[in-house]
Length: 220
Image 1 (tube, one colour):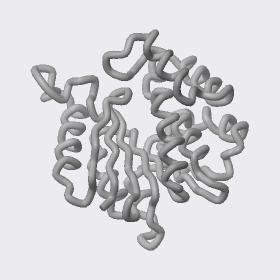
Image 2: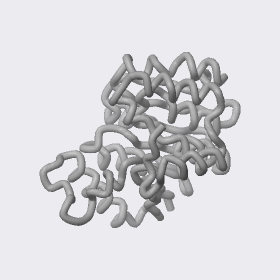
Image 3: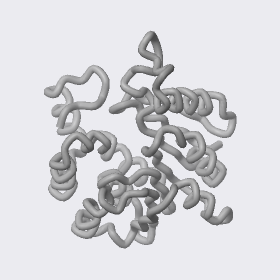
């Protein structure tokens, strides 16, 4: 797999992954099954992001998690593995074709009972969540034009110290300089979202150069 993180050679990327918690055989097979789909496989998160999601779910003791944008299910597998017995991950996506790729791997990994997949517009799914059941952890990696909407619906439902992670916030480095995407709707949406988080006094946030940029925000 080609490295996604900035300034990493393929050799350094392999070193980085192997010296963390690399994908186990089930996760590695899901990565390969996704790669076999061709160019669209670029939508899958990097393995170091997967390990980070699992670790964060475990150390925070998350029991109620939400994912917006499931694709072929690798990130869902990683989050679900970090949840305790009885923990629940709600996955929001619109594609049965892509999410069906991941289902067998969730079963093989023994986490299918922790994952609920709802197909349909994520905004509607999030708005329907009960206000009296706060979220512990959320991950957003979906259509960029709606990032701000998803973030708002999630942050208002996060418990104090709850976390939301958001992918692709560096947009290939094009969020600054002459390459800033003035004529790129998705890039412009990312830039607007980054400004929203930076000015949001409800959270403490850090933007990390992991893969294509990962924002981590904690609800105060």
